[in-house]
Length: 135
Image (cartoon, rainbow, N blue to C red; front, side, top):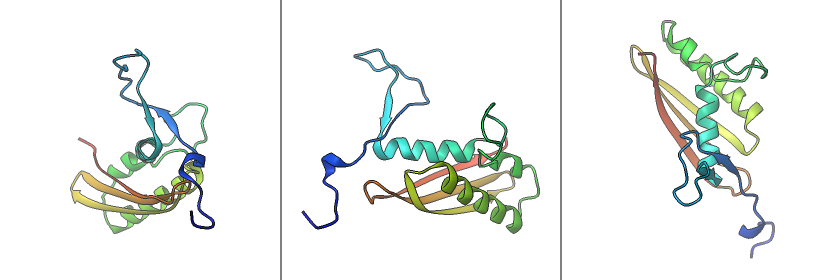
């Protein structure tokens, strides 16, 4: 084992419930998402959440991408979306570091979002991609 590396069995495991709320076929419990899958779901959900959508939460929680889609999407709007997403992930997703966000307009009402980040506990680099439209 190299000096300064953490053995796999000591690395912290992350576990979240699946937002599909599907039942596990054997236990009947809600299916869970673990590790990198849980983190990628969290990143996607943070970016797709609108500000003030969640009651009793910080008013800055949310990527607010949907509200910006109602404006004339130009270079300035895309830069605002990227800066907002960067700040959001730095503030609300402590399990990742160095998020790199790329948002591009793919049609009049659609943007494509790509987020590449490093998972702190494993050093693994992961990319989450999705499209968001207002139709």
